[in-house]
Length: 400
Image 1: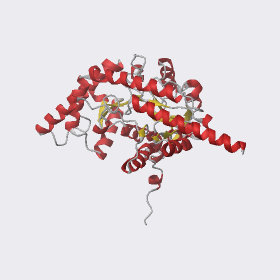
Image 2: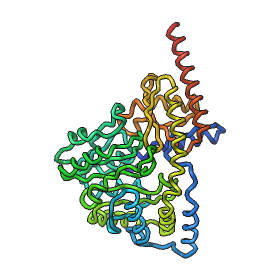
Image 3: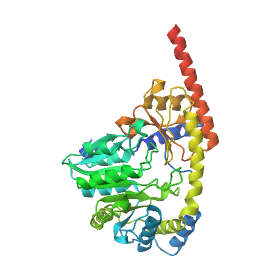
Image 4: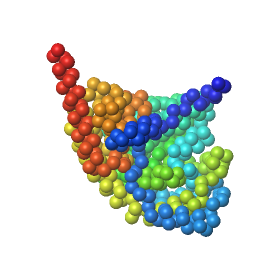
């Protein structure tokens, strides 16, 4: 077999999808599996999206369009940003993308060269690592510590900066920890980026999914995304539109032009009918999203209480997104061993913490985005039963 490019060997993908594939095989055999592995909101996509896409297709909007996004959608994003993120931008600073995931690729590819450094929180969204590895950009990991509620510490970020650093990535609300950075922390990291003349990527894909009622502070407020701040965002999580693959970036105009060329090179454009659906959804903003956040909060409360009832497990209460990130070190297992144990013995599908970085080894991630409160309770009961049985068997063996 012919040898492939070295860069292809550095691709890791998203292991959560690989876990899901294995789980689907078990379900084909008739097994009942409790799904916590994938961050896919279980809510129905908004009805206005279906109505808009059908009309758009019927109107014949099925051809190429502007590679940066249709003007109507970019205008709608400008209004959305001013209302929700509370800063002013313009249409030339907006890039409409096929989902938010690829935005990390666009930004990194247009900013950093091979061998340059980008600061990334650890644990973090898996695609950060896979994309930067593929581009041969050096990843500088700054640990998110449980004792700091998994929030990024600005002083740790500054210590990690070298003359090769090009960019800092922050993610609030966070995947996988559910942590939400304070306004002061975001401002301090911005000042660090400004001091060292770095770009600051703020991944805000979980946007309004917070449980204290306050929309998170956006780093875009600090320079209106005109100098160094780049906002990653989209409709996937906020409106349960993961399969629609529609996102938007906000960044300085010169960078947007370069990223638009990269999008044009790789994807040509985002489907126009998908963009029409996005316009309709953004116009209905609050009426759609707030109700879902309340449902997620109830699931979070049930799950966190249940996790803290398990022997050897302790879990902080996440302030945003829809993930719990419990410490399972007290069980005597690594995160990966814990996940394998739970899938095999309790038929509960969970993602190991080390998928999200080397500092996640003693943790696991549970997504409560799709599972009902009733099934959360059933899953916790099963996990408790198999853990207690395992402890009992271990005690018997030790006596023998």
